[in-house]
Length: 405
Image (cartoon, rainbow, N blue to C red):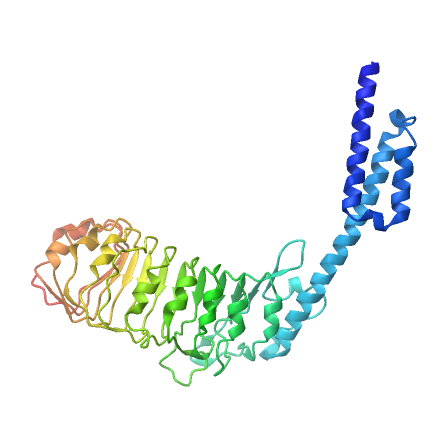
């Protein structure tokens, strides 16, 4: 019994000293009154140990909890002021019709429309101001944000997600300071009315996984959402080592030439590539070795590719979708396309000079194919009965193909 008591006393003393150490780490020595109380408790001996241990522990834990609460509150309060101020400055530079940002008032900015915060810290981690009603019946939306994008966004050090798509920042360039927001994982600047060169310092965003500065309305020259962007040198994209999704539809890449495939081939995590109507011409280059081992979707339609089908794509077993419509492709459709294990979507329509034996082509597996559009090409032979085995096929277009039934 005596041995057990002494053992308990030793454990008690160790516990008290551990708690005191925690207090010291919390800078409790700066509060001498609290520290003196703890010292008295430790020096009072163990006479009341058996009856008063809960009191000892509760008193010490009280001091610890109040110190943590006060220090934590001060820290969080500073965060709140800094983050809120940055958002208010950002708002002050915008024009927001119909009170779209009417919720941006008061102190609790984490509940403002489009704002997401990290739990417990108050750090802003996401801003989603995508226009929810960009166009209806060809009438300009009444929800467009416009104006200037304030440099204050750079003060949001923990921002990971930024979506400003389908607003109308008419005829201003993409801000250079976006390249300093190094925690960004998601950046969507599509259909915003930006003009000029895309800043090369976006290559600093090594954590970026999703990047979109495309324009869906490039043919409407006076349309306020249309981006008028170009890239002079695409080498900066090699630094986007985490990139999974790249959409640059209607961005002028004519100055890039054939470099695009060599650069993008250095992004092994890339799963989606959208380069429709980017003024790319000539042939589709073949990389010396294929590193796009995660690529699932490639869409390079409406360019001026005067090339055979890039057979190196047959080595990318992860492919799900290929869209190369409205180019000037020629030569034969590779039969190996029908054997890609995950392949679901193929659009080679309106290339005019693509050739192929439709009977041989459709005798391949195509076990997951859902969409097959070969319209307006030079195909021959007859449609085989094996097409009845394409149990997942939902769309088939062979109109204006010169085959014999």
